[in-house]
Length: 256
Image (cartoon, rainbow, N blue to C red; front, side, top):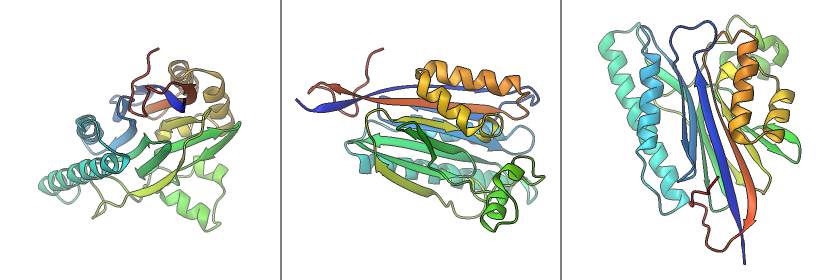
């Protein structure tokens, strides 16, 4: 009898306390091992179209036969959306841009792959230690890397909203990728910057360590809203636990 992985996940999104429109979106495709969040941007509430297009295209991906096929399908879907958004932006004029951050998590065969563009994040909690798997594609991250500002200063920096990569913007689509093994007990969190700016790393670790996925995302929502949530928020929490069941594959949808 071999060990299989039980995956439990949940997501949420909210406009926050200040914004009229919600341009954040999430995807929870536990049935094929695919999760994502996106933070749209664009004038005249077009950001929700950008993030929505990403989720619609990812949600249409069929059950893959391998992790490699899933990765290829995700890349293809994001490239198609990127091209369509670029074309829409050009049609609207040089001063209009329609785009979105994205972070995607895929799990297959005991490994995870993360693709991202922008400042939406993937966190991994393993053995009570929180790791930020993604690195923000943002102006303030570049300032941090050069030693100009600290991470604490970046939170309230006037250029905190400037990103350097996105789906639908900045020429060719440039996705960064990380991959590693998944271990029993791992906890993942995908979130937009609306969560990351309102909830500290220590709080994120405590929440995803101690609460099941549905309660975890609702707790993060409550924390963000209690701090006035000036931006839209979106998050997906995922728990990976070992079970002994020879009939369960990495693509099986667990009950409960």
